[in-house]
Figure (cartoon, one colour):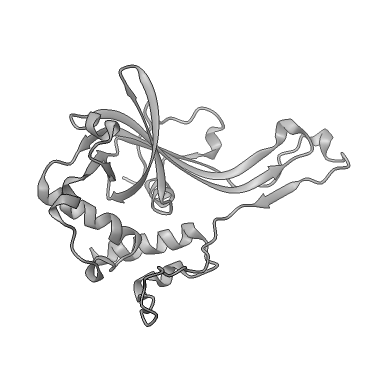
Length: 235
């Protein structure tokens, strides 16, 4: 099955022509981002928490401190909505009403649960590093038992999901087309800068080959997607 089946939580109602339930589209938006926002409710109070996420098939993972109220509450199972958004452009029209933004957004729903099984938890904690920087764990010192204990991992099976994308120019009203003001799209990208070595790094220490995807001047979402693809081929 190539598409997610839209349900009452994920069905796109506003501008449905921009929506997609295609798995590959949803996965690409998730995999080319480093941060997600997890929304949930505890005792009637809504919260939304930013976190680093990673995907393995139809499972989303994220992690945080074992002292986190969110992660402790998610232990027995908590309904959540996870969103990822890429801002691609500022859209300036000839009226304030028609100003907009170009974007790619994924919204996924499921029940979040703490990972309690020790082997799965340890594997997941190593996976978050290799998902971002494939091959890096092989060069690092192993995590200690205390570090693993201090970190919680949450998993969520994707039950419903949808994507929404705007990637076009200005949508002016026809009568506004001759209004004498500039209109168009200002592209927005997050670009990688020049690496800044640790102040205690020995001068002769080279940049490892597994960081080649993160070369200066490259767009972050492209680097993350490349790293994710390389990680998938190695696992």
